[in-house]
Length: 128
Image (cartoon, rainbow, N blue to C red; front, side):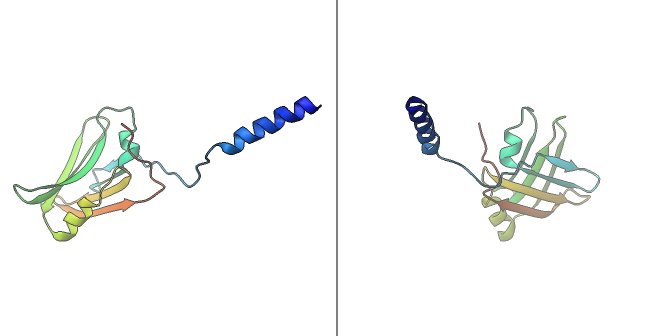
């Protein structure tokens, strides 16, 4: 009996010494709606997929001084838009991290009309 109690205490000690991670976690995969001209997804979730094509990104291109956003689907279809650089768009792009959620819209001329970047602890970081 005493031996069983010692073993039980030993395992309880080991179990309580591990760090516990808690909190909400949300994976948001790539979504592209060509009809409504919308693309969105969470960078870390998309990078973690086994598909070799899927990606979402926005960047500032200094030559023509534009913001360029693009999404590439699992079938290697590319959807992109660009807009003249503004301070607000530049700030949104600079906020993108490996755990960011990106949402962008474009018009019929492939001009970016909306860009939303959300950084949250519930989004997973990008895994190589």
